Image (tube, rainbow, N blue to C red; front, side, top):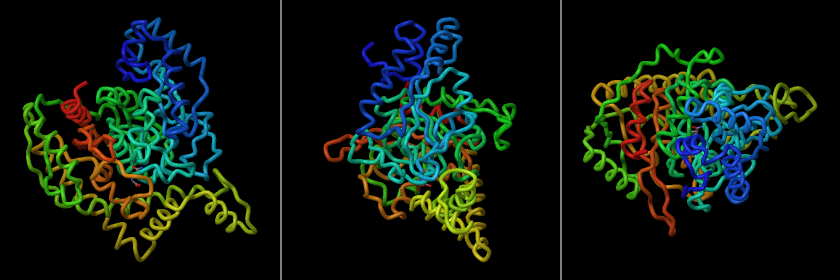
Length: 475
Ligand code: GLN
């Protein structure tokens, strides 16, 4: 084997484990050794877990006894974003508020991964409560991009993305409310996927915007992302918004795809390198027999504004439970109101406070009609426009980001940071599945920085989405 064990994909590691070329213990040790060596420089992990000897032994036993029948994820070391609960482990959402909060149960995705025999290397850094596009808003310090440590890994799942890109685990889970899986995947050179709303249970994920949030995979290949997605999806009695398995149609995947390209969205702010990489990728897809078609999505220009009304509204509601009394940090004041004030002031960072204020404002009487209800109406129009476009195309393609990874502090103005989400938020507003796949690089300061192409597919058409990803990145 020319690659080190921690550099393998899920499928390569699974094959090596079954062939007896690798043991679960050796794979675990390789990932943890890399994590311990590189984490001081990258800060991908908030915590690297001690080895779970029983789980390692059990995974090896299953592979030895069941061979090919053992789940592909058996014995595979994964990294988990710090807003997904693992029983007995801290889940802080990178916030002082939950710094010492220990999860009392497993998120449904974690139970499913445990059943499959997967192992957990650690919990990864993120923007506080998943609010951000760079992982600079973590209360515990910023994660660095493994391709250039002067630059951000993207966010909010930046720790998970950096951990996979630097081979500090084999693959990872993140959460995506407005692009937080796809955007760091693009900036770190990975495949990152946001499932259809309701495909994956949100039980045990610390809520940000409940009508937008989904848990999904960050992986080195489309095939790995699909393996993880298949392992975590499904109806869950603990999340009433999950889609019953029987209602999940087997989508036929056409041999050649009709790819819709909304050219009108690719405005001036797109950097020349991203435009060039996007055009080259489309030319290759066309040369491989896929059809490129123009599509019009006229309301897309309002998606970001709608998202930055709906999301903070839901954030302000979800974070209301963090009052110092029921969960998390408690700072005593003279009165009960003071208790709340002190606890929330000490617990929340500036970006979290900004969004709580914004959300409370757009929901307040007198403004709810002007802001929240209008944004919700725009959401309906976006859904209809995409549904109409999907009558003539299988997927819709545009770049994932406007530019490659930016430097620390470059987007200190909140609005410039929010603009990073311009291409990714629509999939969350419409609930449709979407992913980012690597599409070449851009040279900056002597480093090659990854870029991503973004595909959206109709509701529940993940199979088509993964086919598009494989068309760009074979394997
Ligand atoms: N960057 C977006 C935001 O800050 C998306 C975050 C996310 O997907 N969790 O809201």
